[in-house]
Length: 103
Image (cartoon, rainbow, N blue to C red; front, side):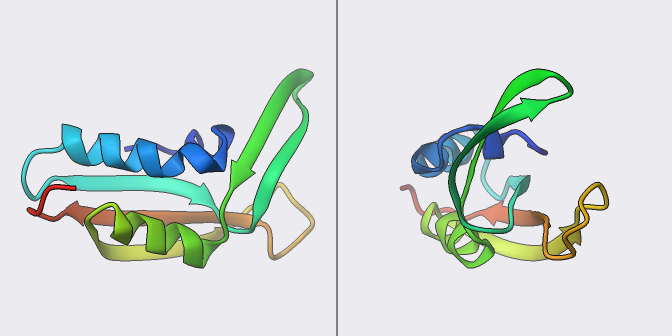
């Protein structure tokens, strides 16, 4: 399970994170993650007075990446970020199962 963490790692590293998750899980293990929902190569700002970094893929790319890393997507859902005034701002939650074939 990883909620609201992967978005704070450069998006070019998301594949490596997912592959490491695959390696850690037992056969048929479940992956439950929260990723960004829009294409954002890099954003650097402050959050609650502290420096913060965001980087994410759009929803479709994130779903394809999870599949590419040998997971079967069981469910996914976009959740609007209620702290934003933008109704398109939110996060994608993904529940996936590890496939047996090694990557």
